[in-house]
Length: 160
Image (cartoon, rainbow, N blue to C red; front, side, top):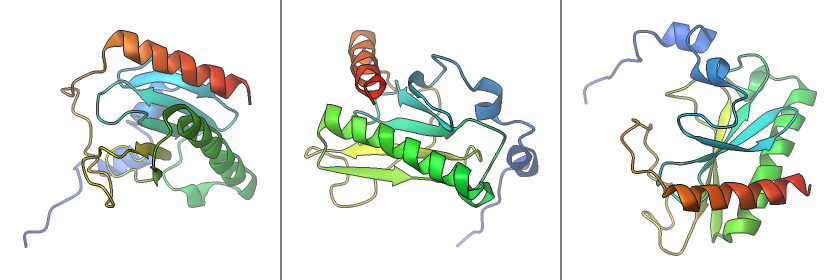
């Protein structure tokens, strides 16, 4: 097996020098989706790419952090509590068979969790979701469906 290498700019990425989440944080809509949750610790973004219904990112919104272990106990509690608020809304809205929580950061090393509802019709039932780094070439949800889902999720999340 051939060993692969981390990207040449990996140190810049983990330092936050070129962090797309730090640079683009706080927007209502970004290149990947729309904010459905505005918390103290987390912003939740429903992804507009037609990868999986309800695919959402819960993104740490304070200083640049790579690992959840870098958070204080209070921050960690806030991060996970708000991530679960978003997950509960996704479960209520989409009614999936299972919810996956993936805290990776291998492409964008800024603390975030991928929330992936899993359904009866699924690309890999009973296995991890085949999530790949987005390339900006993904098919997008029809705009009317996307706006409808964003509106419905925001309504649920504002009720909390």
